[in-house]
Amino acid sequence: MHKVSIIVILALLMGLAAPLAPASAGPKPPDYKPVDIGPEIREWDATQERIQGGPSAITPQQEEAQEAKAMAAAASTPYAD
Image (cartoon, rainbow, N blue to C red; front, side):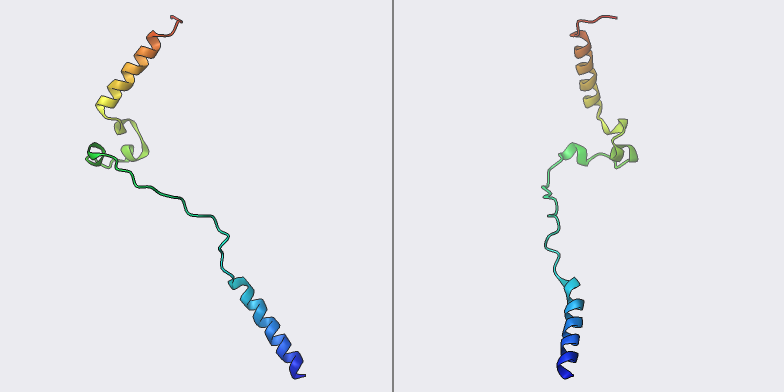
């Protein structure tokens, strides 16, 4: 009778200990690499538009460069209005 109760107790303990196994099969965390964003961007105000990438997130110099690039691309197309 004692052998049966010992076996039952061991089976119960083993059943309770099974969920405590380590979760080593989980995915690895992303490999974040710090990047220096530069002094100009660090001086920007943290407005909601800048955080979301709105129009104010672009500096005037970047806007002028984008406009010049768009104008050059439009001028170089063979199609005319």
